[in-house]
Image 1 (cartoon, helix red, strand yellow):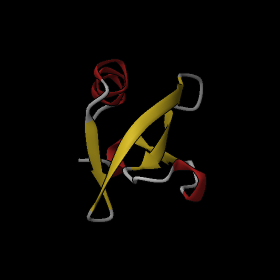
Image 2 (cartoon, helix red, strand yellow):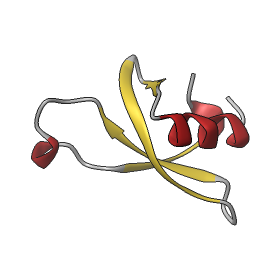
Image 3 (cartoon, helix red, strand yellow):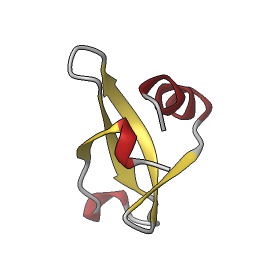
Length: 58
């Protein structure tokens, strides 16, 4: 996935796949071309945001 596609997923609140799990894109850093993702879960207190390169997402 490209950085621009990941940002579109963030804007449209769509899930992405990372390591065979579903995540929401919750932020992005244009300077480093990374996105912040949070695992799709019923309890947000127990999910940790992760910064990844957009190319790692599908």
